[in-house]
Image 1 (cartoon, one colour):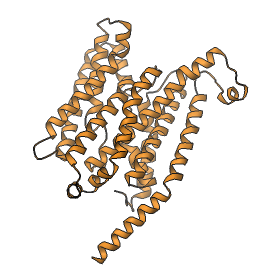
Image 2 (cartoon, one colour; image 1 turned 90 degrees about the vertical axis):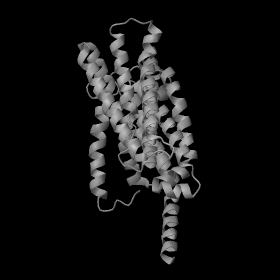
Image 3 (cartoon, one colour; image 1 turned 90 degrees about the horizontal axis):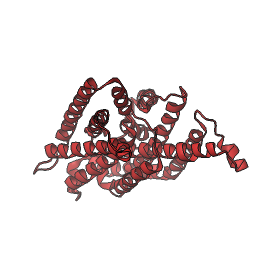
Image 4 (cartoon, one colour; image 1 turned 180 degrees about the vertical axis):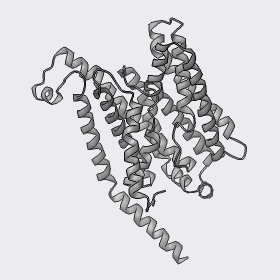
Amino acid sequence: MKARTASSMLVKKQIAIQQKGYVPTIMMLCAVLLAVAFIALNAGAVKVNIWQWIGSGSASPLQHTILWDIRLPRILMTMLTGAGLAICGAVLQAICRNPLADPGLIGVSSSAALCAGAALALLSVVQLPPLAMTYFVPLSAFVGATLSLILLLKIADSAQGMNTLVLILAGVAINAGAMTLLGLIQYVVDDATLRQITFWSMGSYAGINYTSLSITTVPVVLGAYYFWQIRHPLMLMSCSEKQAKYQGVNTRKVKLTSLWVVAAIVAVCVSFTGIVGFVGLVVPHICRMLFGAHLRILLPTSILFGAILVALADTLARTLIIPAEIPIGLITSMVGVPFFLYLIVREKRKFNYV
């Protein structure tokens, strides 16, 4: 009994320490995010010095168009999708109690890529009206992500509840099947369409406008707000699902609702930008190592760190080999993998996070 009381006091002390450093951490990440935004606005094939513009208050029409109509919506989209993918990864890892869980694991991203690839293949042989061609690929990707989640829930759900192990295994199977069918599509299309599908599947923020940004904002913001409201049930489930049930958490409802929200966020992000890999997997781990495992800290830090990572990666993707662009998925992997390995080596003897 004394040991249990001492353990409880230790946990409360650790939470109090984490909460004490909560506000400075968030402020620091917000400052870094703002600095990254200014760097990204300045960087590009055409030189637009935003500092000089702020000082003089004048700019040419070309600079105005580049800054406000091309770069700004693109930068905001990178931050928005980075935040969305990161928080989805953190929530999935909490629900599944699996450190490898991320939006790609449950098949949502790959199914979206499959339907987007099929849409691109169809557009190569069928002529559609200009407006329909603009949104045909994003809409197809969204439909693919939604259908994959419906299939996943049909397989994993039962009268006894949703089995986490079956959920993960079904997601892996759907992911493998979707990538196999996408490979078949890539095999039969022409070279130009193959290049489009390949570039899309690696992620790209080219062509982002305020319309796509506004469409993406709604599910990401509402989803982040919902996850923040249920952070306590999610925290209990990340420790023990049985313990969460004993404390009155409707674990089946939390799982189902969370999966639908995750699917909505990932689907709308992937629909306009393609697959931006590695963000949902690695960002929650990095934040867990650096800032703590409690979801009160993990969720907001994952949002900010994911936004920073993707914004930096997109800036590198469009400036390293001007005027060409590198797929952002390659950049996120190149940036994320070494840093993640460094943190693992540094923390390998501790692993004191959940």
